Amino acid sequence: MNPSEIEHVLVVGAGTMGHSIAQVFAQHGMEVDLVDINQTVLDHALNLIKSNLAILAEFGRVSGDEISEIMDRIHPSTNLATAAQNADYIIEAVNENPEIKKEVFLQLDENCSEDIVLASNTSGLDVFSIVEIKKPERLIIHHWFCPPYIIPLVEIVPGPKTPPELISFSVKLMESLGKKPIVLKKFTQLFIINRIQGVLNLQVYEMIAKGWITPEQIDLAVKTSLGIRLPIVGLVQTQDFTGLDLILDVQKNMRMNRRYPQVENLVKQGRLGIKTSKGFYNYEGRSEEEVLKKRDRQYLKMLNFLEKINAFEPV
Ligand SMILES: NC(=O)c1ccc[n+]([C@@H]2O[C@H](COP(=O)([O-])OP(=O)(O)OC[C@H]3O[C@@H](n4cnc5c(N)ncnc54)[C@H](O)[C@@H]3O)[C@@H](O)[C@H]2O)c1
Image (cartoon, rainbow, N blue to C red; front, side, top):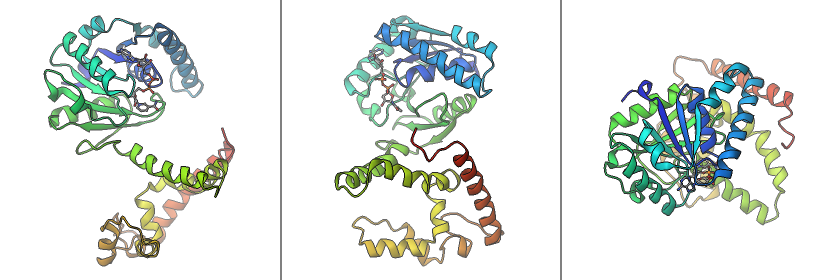
């Protein structure tokens, strides 16, 4: 299937995620049925979408004229069965509860055509084990990030029966919506970002519980260091700039009980990072000064921008 053939989308669940996912599809010209069991949630969802579109207009990302056309393409409903019959693509964004998800997919399976792609926006549930549908090879995770109408990343997570064609369809579909899809090779609980965020959160809770630092000071520390570096060098490339030999020394000094051999192996190969032209990344053919200049120009642009918008103040 080609994403350009999708005309009717069904989004199930109109809460924090569903309303905004529906908005993105409607912004890209598709008719969207937005279904929830709760009429009050649906009414609120439409207000939120209007407000989101007004913000996008403020930033020149939609025109004022487009807003009413986008709103007209979104059809709120409490009738899942009827909406499922019309859909070319379905994404589920109901509560992160295995029983609720199982029930929703049973209803979808009964009512939609067997060829329709069924995607779940679960944050980490193994829907491939939970959900019972006739053709499980059409099930895939499309994990969006909050707020979906702004954040580009969508994690694509295949199940044990997902064919490669469904993965490439998913990538093309997300790209056609202006998103940045990242494909995991296989299902792993919590995927990429929630895993990383989970580890960070554990450290945050521990430091607060032990009274070492206040929540506000943690956020200020993160914003004034990682906040500048992460958008430019991510979590892996940043280590090439630190020096992998130093990172290995720190790991040894900390006597970390859970160590992976990657850093040690790279150091053994003489790949210490930017200073040896190779680390996790390969910098051969470029001088150290050239790479550092490129990084530092980006850092300074980021710093100027963050200072300009007062990002170091709490929201
Ligand atoms: N909130 C986030 O930041 C976030 C980010 C990424 C993924 N997710 C995932 O997205 C999913 C939805 O999360 P959320 O935060 O939007 O939840 P939410 O509680 O805001 O919304 C869930 C909605 O599903 C509706 N619902 C429940 N049963 C239904 C049914 N049978 N048919 C139709 N609608 C039904 C509820 O009425 C509710 O409005 C979860 O799986 C969650 O893990 C959430």
